[in-house]
Amino acid sequence: MSRVLVTGATGFVAGHVIEELIRGGHQVRGTVRSLRDPARVAHLHRIADALGGSIELVEANLSDDAGWGDAVAGQEYVLHTASPFPATPPRDEAELIGPAVDGTLRVLNASVRAGVRRVVMTSSASAVSAGRPRDEERRRTEEDWGEPDRSAPYAKSKIFAERAAWDFAAEHPGLELVVINPGLVLGPVQHAAAGTSVSLVRRLLNRELPAVPKLGFSPVDVRDVAHAHRLAMEVPDAAGNRYICAGDNMWFGDIARILGDEFGPQGYRVPTRRMPFWMLWVAGRFDREVRLGLDFVGSAELLSSDKAHGELGWSMRPVRDTLADTGRSLIELGLVRPR
Ligand code: NDP
Image (cartoon, rainbow, N blue to C red; front, side, top):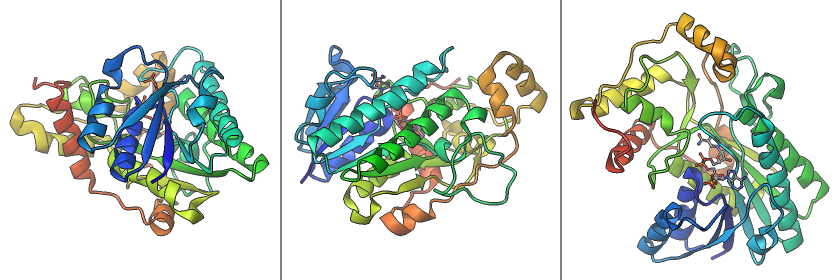
């Protein structure tokens, strides 16, 4: 049993990481920005109780030094999942990049001072491939890096934060760093404040889109991402490595069709019609995020998770199960309804 700190405990990924750790018998502490609203963390206590464990929660904000020293005190491992991931990008990209980069350095500095053995950081597949042309036949690997100048603010924040972490680790050889780079994370949501990535499924089931653009994603199940974090913490030779955890390319339309097969009989009319390029182009005139995505319409996201399979012994469940479980959890929580 180890003492493990998980940053950003309210998050979609963190909730599953915490569940995985408690199930594995670890003693978990989590950071949250504020403890004032018990409803935001009730699911964590419920999960811990159900597993016969417990969770301690402390306050710390990525934008503030306060709290980090106390948060990491006495911990052997830190799993750093916290990072701003808003559904709509802020006007000023510094609102994402600042907390992502400075917050990561706060967590790493506090970890070094407290003698933490290993930090596992949740980066993103964006830090591997964002802003790079997708017209190559080659699958991207951990050798690759995203191109910040051609990336949306969120992807930029992930590239800069991961780079800052590796630079920090190079200057502090006593601290072990492992990075997980997940693709699009889907899977069951544990509470009503569902994560940004799951909103893709929510919007399809709620028929909030008229049609689906031909965009390629590499989905991965949140439970498998959580397992990857535990392996990254436990496998001795993982230190100093980044690991892509992402499935094969899936077109948005294929995701919609699977959801339609699964939930159509329950009255969910999932849109499966292809959104024409001109419609996206027009939307891109008004929305920079859409504009940046135009370059990637029609091209697949090709990523290799071979390293995680080979070195961590990691595996993924079938994406159809992930999509079905995502939809079921959204229905159970009343976050979608038939239209
Ligand atoms: P969520 O938005 O659900 O979780 C993000 C967490 O970060 C929340 O707990 C949030 O706290 C916390 N956070 C944000 N800003 C701050 C801040 N200034 N100070 C302290 N905490 C902060 O997203 P996910 O769970 O999906 O993402 C978790 C991690 O996984 C992120 O690093 C994300 O970049 C990465 N990732 C996610 C993918 C996905 O598809 N979901 C894909 C690849 C990577 P609060 O609740 O207070 O806002």
